[in-house]
Image (cartoon, rainbow, N blue to C red; front, top):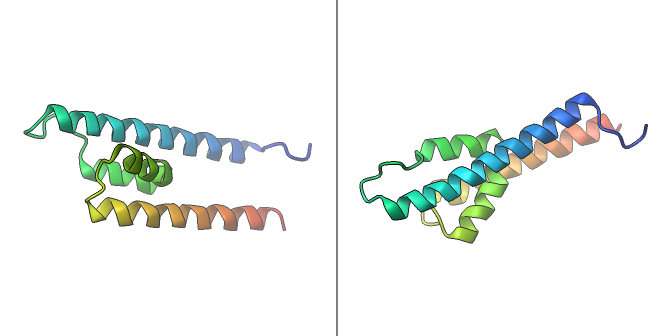
Length: 101
């Protein structure tokens, strides 16, 4: 049927949704942990957050960080996550266009 997703497309959507939700949850958790702990215990490592952004959760994590004002002074996040998101969007558009040729 036209408009129906194949197995690969369904997997891709579920994957991106899962990584995005996990990224948002860990970002919010880290914000809460930063208020509770002065010695850094219980925090999510910055490399873990960046890795989740790299794996596909960059855009929702970036928006979440702006909304809750978390890591907004860290250039690594405020530049890195939008770059990851731009690359993800470019890849998705390229794949979409090639599939529909």
